[in-house]
Image (cartoon, rainbow, N blue to C red; front, side, top):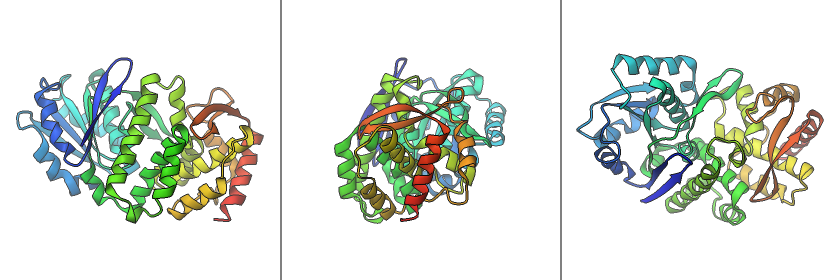
Length: 364
């Protein structure tokens, strides 16, 4: 197990990664969180069924806890579910020294983190991620719920007190969830580390055959990359926007197809394909897009998620992206692998890229 540190302008916190990381929980509440009056576990219902007993055994015996299971995946990130969590917290007598534990994937973490950020104007919380995707979302303090008109539109910046990432939980993930989570690993390589991208393309050819040790290495690498960006720009006023590579088009696909009908990572993979094509057009990116497409489609990613959805529909959704200022849609593009930039794109340029990716996707 490794202990990584995330540093921001106002705080620092540990990320424990590896098998048996769950054992660190008791130490947290005997040490830096020893004044905690009550724990409130907000758990993905599927994860609770699979691993709830393991988490309960790992909780400190000296601190009482409450438990609320919420719907699996993006279905948890609704106003109704958010209200249910706040009501439960009030009914169970949580106070300003209580602590919320987010137990599940990225969606459970986003929901629980936003509940923690808004309950009594902000209480502490700990992320206990159980998916590959959450190696990205659990770190950095961005917490949110969805609106029918856009993903993560209602949220806050609220850093956790710690991230306890026990990789044993990953062993029960279905292949689709492995694929979804690994899209964020690929994103980190594209925006920050060309050699890491080469390593991924050489060693990952089949998720079913992925070596556990190499997976742990990939997760640690992704967390380290994100940690460096968050340290420089905690509240996404500058370089942190680079972490949204592939997300502007990907979020539009997610919103149009329907949250839960396509995984976040699968939509982001299609969004990265769009962003790479746009980078070739706007930034003259020298990149073997055909080889990249052959690799990711071989891993099971679909590049044709826009089928049945017009450019106009997706454009309207892209206009609501959080990076959009006024009428200008700002995209994260690459000048080279490891060299991201923010670039303004007009409607005609976006439509040209959209037409290109539709033609190319048909080949795969």
